[in-house]
Length: 313
Image 1 (cartoon, rainbow, N blue to C red):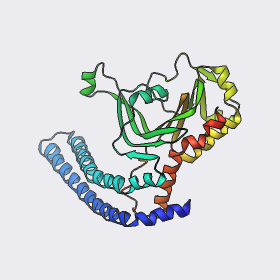
Image 2: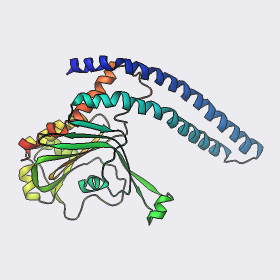
Image 3: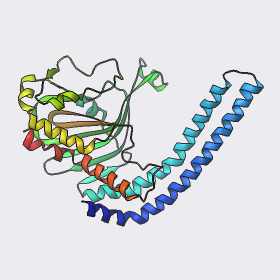
Image 4: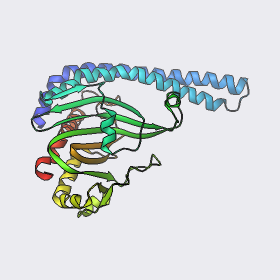
């Protein structure tokens, strides 16, 4: 595989070099934006604190400086990121094979995320980087999602803003398999932060004790049919789930999974931007290019790595 990645890298190198020039220009812009933000904040500080005698002038000036920098930062970086997706990431998807497609602005249906049972209650969604694969025996779609829960009482209040809980950020995957599960299973991390007062655990979920010590240390398993789930989730199957996880989960990522009917749902929580370039990293760095492509290959191969047909039939 490394030789294939090297060949792909060499093919895309002229485009990577062009993006590297753009990245360096963006870095210079960011330095100018930082200086501009500090100057604006300093002027406001002088006016509010030293001239008008307002003791909270320093807080206001800092807030405005950060706001100005954030707005200008995103404006400067967004074009660079979109160029990367159009000129590089689209090619990486095509390199996987003709069964794959990509839409940088594509959306996953909210109902799919709700049906998974992997998230707390949410009422605001942002999705991008929709990747789909369609094969003879299975199909999948996945994308980067952000989920929030707004505590407003009605839609009008939601539109006006209000207290909001950040429920999830990361990768969400749903696959359709030839195997139909006669039960529902939820495999939830024990280390999920409590971001919502309402538990994900429904009244009709039964806790399942699995015979795998390492698995039990990290996960809690629930099902709507405890007896059948206990028979199904034997150590070999749990090892396969852990092995598939290791291929896609990096440091500080959290992995959860659910089986329902002929559907497999996977969430990978992370603050990392999974399919976007890092402005601080040279675009021509081969090691970074190779690591990103391997991560893409492993995430798009989740169903294959889980070996559903043999392990969970």
